[in-house]
Length: 147
Image (cartoon, rainbow, N blue to C red; front, side, top):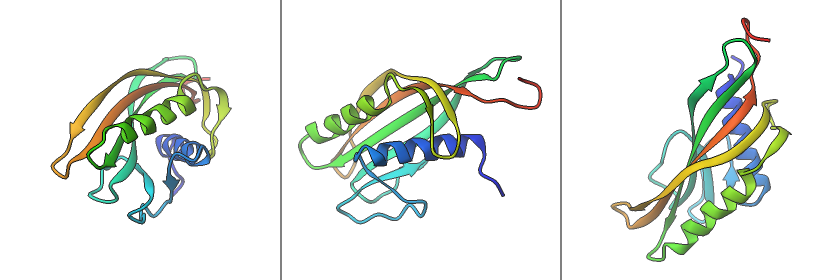
């Protein structure tokens, strides 16, 4: 089965973040305790440092091939100090906010990308700090009924 558009979008962003040295991307989703794993859709129990990417629909033009896809980026970092998770979130902002005219690994064309919102998620039951940022990616997504 061929990967779908959303899978290609998130995988492409995962590659982009890994290339920016913000984390490690593996299709297997298996990471050492010392790595910052980049994961799609789920927030695993381990490792303590993760970047989770989840997509959601914002809007689709009915006739043109433009879509806006929301990408929630959740970050988590173990330890008592909240600064490392803020720094990780800031690095992701630097990599994604203002991104324009890029074709990601997997072929998805990102026309533009910007952060729409973000917040601290506090600490989880394992005392790991979390943050969430929401990016809006305008993408080129032709389909059967759109040019």
